[in-house]
Structure formats: C-alpha cells, structure tokens
Amino acid sequence: MTSRILVVDDEPDLEQLIVQRFRRQVRDGSYSFVFATDGVNALAELDKDPTIDMVVTDINMPRMDGLTLLSEIQQRENGLATIIVSAYGDISNVRTAMNRGAFDFVMKPIDFADLDATISKTLHSLEINRGYQRKQQEAERAKAQLSRYFSPSLADSLTGVQLGAERRVITSMFTDIASFTTLAETLEPSLIGPLLNEYLTGMTEIVFDHGGTLVKIIGDALNVLFGAPTEQEDHAARSVACAMDLDTFAEAFRGRWAEKGVAMGKTRIGVNTGSALVGSFGGGRFFDYTAYGDTINVAARLEAANKQLGTRVLVSGSVADRIPDFHGRPVGNVVLRGRSEALPAHEPLTAERHSDPLTAAYREAYRKAEACDPVALPAFAALLGQDSGDGLVSFHLKRLLTGQTGVSVALD
Image (cartoon, rainbow, N blue to C red; front, side):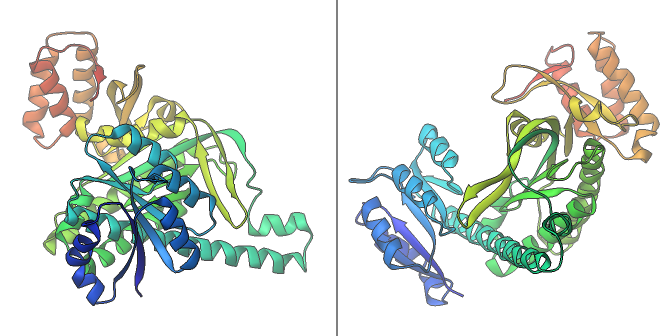
C-alpha cells in the first residue's frame, strides 16, 4: 500500500532532492509525494486529495507558515500525522509545533537518512493508531448492538466506562527504547517492521495483563495509565509490577535480537503517581483518551533520567510510598531536567535482588552518602568491584570521586 506524503516548503530545489533521495521508495510503491510551496497551497492539496496520509512541512514560508498550517490540520478530522522541518537550534518553534500536535521533527540542513527514518516511524505509528481507531469504532458498534438488548447502564458496564474529563489520582508510566531512531536508520524497513511489531505486541500484552490503560504509542514508546478510566485502589502497585515485567520482557527481547545481529538499546521506564486530568478529549469523530498534568510530565522525565543514573526503571517516591512492601533501593533526591524541586526516586527490584546481600550493602553505602560520611566512597567502590555492571553504583561512585556529597542529584 502506497503512503501519500505532502511536502510543504518554498525552497525550489527541495522537490527535486526529495524525488531523487526517495526514488527507490517511489519506484517500489512505498511512497508517493505531493508538493506545495506554502500553507495555503497545502490546504488546497488536502482538500482535493483525501488519500494523503502525512504532511512534512517547513515552518518559515510565505502567506501561511508551518505552525499555522499545523493548527489548521489539527482542526480537521482527517487523522493526518505531521513532521515539522525547523532550522537547527530553533527549539522555541519546535516546542510550539509539538504542543500543537506535530508527531515529530527534523532539523535543517536535512539529513535525508534521518528524514527517511522519521517518515517510516511516523507512518508506522499512524497505522497503529488507525488500527486502534478501527477497534474503537468496532467497540462503539458493539455497544449500539448491546443497547438493543440491555439497559443503557448495563450496556455501559459491558462495553466500557464513561470517559468524561475528571481529575483523579493516577499512576503514569512512560517507556522508550534508547537510541531507537539511530538504530532505525541502519536497518531495512523489512526488518524494522517485524522487530517493532513483535516488541509492541509483547509490551502492550503485559500492560493489559496488569490492567493498564494504553494511552498512546509513539514510535517505540508507550504512555500508560493505571487507575483510569476504571478505579484501581492498587494502581501504584500494579504499575511497578507491570514495569518489572516489561523490563524482563524487554531485556529478553533485546537478547533475542542481539543473536540476530541487531544491537537494540535498553528499554527505559519511568513511573509517577499523582493527580491528573483524565478523560476523552476531542470532537466529532476524533477523540483521544489521555491525561494532562505535572504528574504525567514527571513520569516522562523519570524515564529520560535513567540514562544518566545508569538504571532502566525509575519510580518516584509517590509511587513507592503507596506500596507497603515495596522492593527497591533509593536513588537519591533527584532534580529532573527542566525542574527546580527535587523528588525522591527509587529503582524497583525483583524479590530475589531485593534480598541479595549486595542490595543491603548498597543501602548501607547510600546511608553513609546521605550523611556525607567519607566512608561512602570506599563503600561504593567495593560494591562496584563486586558487580561492575551496576550502573547506579557507578553513578554514585563517580559523583563522590568528583567531590560531590550527599544524595541530592541535579540532572542535565
């Protein structure tokens, strides 16, 4: 099936470059390109060609710029995905574009390998989302069918719950594969497809097994909620159990593909509990069940913080405090990127690792670091000598070796 891509840019040479760089995909029928010189022409193309799947647009253009075009596209019920092309370092416009609904972005000068990988990832995610939309439509038809035989309240209980906006305490989870975009640039689409499908299938099945709500799939990343839309008193405990099973699956998956010669990055997971606005948002035929609020942002930043801390799974103190028998070890009082206040973070552990003598030794070394005791440095050095692969121990040892004290950690 050919994917129709509308490219919007006022540079006269870009059309020729696109046609030349993507000639293989055009020749084999994977892609078909349409071109427009500004936002006004782009909207005209969208009006006359309903088969267009996605838009790649520059920001700075005459008559109608890319940000205005993006807003116009979001108001339409066409399910289009948009990639923004921005000048290098123009973070402000990129942030505005992402907030207005852009799926992804690439920087100028355009790296066409990166553009190809971004287009492939976007189209794949678009197909997944369309699949979920088809399932949603089927569910709505099933509900209408049930309503012929049952009362409205019973039909609702059989087919789902009311999804109106409400504020409630939930647990949010984000997952992401490290350096997946770089990996995608090196692999053929015929290999990326099966790899990503197998990964996402396994990950989503685990989420559903733990009663999680899959809010969104963005490329290889998942956004999951616990405690919404249905009430789950144990949503924090569910999220940690789910995170541990996801970590086990992801590491095994990474090992299987390594045997096939594909070096996948680690899956990083961040989990946070707090208040959020949840519900179904949208209009007409388009709607999206999602959550908004600082709770969600913190979960996303915890996921990213794993990279610096040497961990794969991080949960906030608000998660650990809700689990009476929480198995884990303290990471520190972490100031996440873009924030000013520290929050306690923990690395959850399996029951076996929780009872390991090395974990008890870590806690003792951590207490010494917390008390600014100089004995903490040799304690962490001894731990690293016993387990050289412990990323969190390595992180703390490096901090102490550079003269830092305590357990307050400010991340880049």
